[in-house]
Image (tube, rainbow, N blue to C red):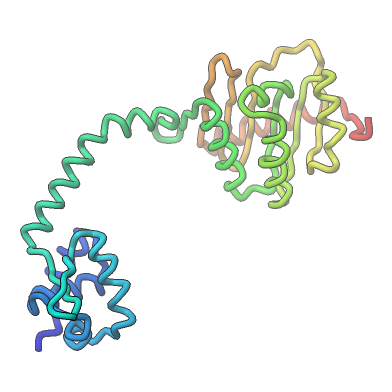
Amino acid sequence: MRMHYSADLVQGLEAYGLDKKEAKVYLAALELGPTSVLELSRRTSLPRTTLYPILERLKMQGVFRVGKKKSTTVFTAEAPARLSERMHERENELQKSVPALELLQETAHGGPGVTFYEGTDGFKRLWKQILDSGVKEYRLLTSGVGLRDYVKETYLVERVIAERKKRGMKSLQLIRDSRVARQIISKDSEELRESRLLPSDIDLPATVIIFADQVAFVTTRRENMMIILASGDVAVTYRTLFDLVWNKAQRVSSNL
């Protein structure tokens, strides 16, 4: 009874997508021909309770065919040549999909250190990246209205701010003075945020977010783009500039 197979055989089947146990079952079935679970169990030394889910997966992957011999269910391993054909078929199908996949990638593309996001989906991905960064504090420079161009206020409160609070992530915010800004600041204490006001006559069409070693730029919805620059030097520079302005900006009570 043969129970040990060369590493090359197993590695070849792993390249097809099988794990080591699945490869062992396939190789045993090649030697046995149409076979039952009981015979496979004896050949592989795997219990039948382990074999049943493995065989089900292999059947779904087209590695095994299932049939009947009298009243017994028998499993037949597909010929190795057939597996090779299926590999080529999969490769051909993937190649056909590449143009569409590259088009989909346009919502997030860029070179080393730079990522571009677009639209509402890109906005959500940006915030997931910020939340997943592990920082306990980030800095935000904003007019207070630009972010609402991408998502509704309920999304910002119930998804972004709620998750930020859950993770204990504080926001330091420089915001242009306006009625909307004052409304936002009134919720600072409950939304784990500290804000300071900038003059109302300055122009801030884009929002800047500084977190970890990255700086994100969120344009207006007219330009519809978010740019994330991953650079420790740039992040330190922007953090320093932010702190200089922060120390000069108007303090305001959240109990407006």
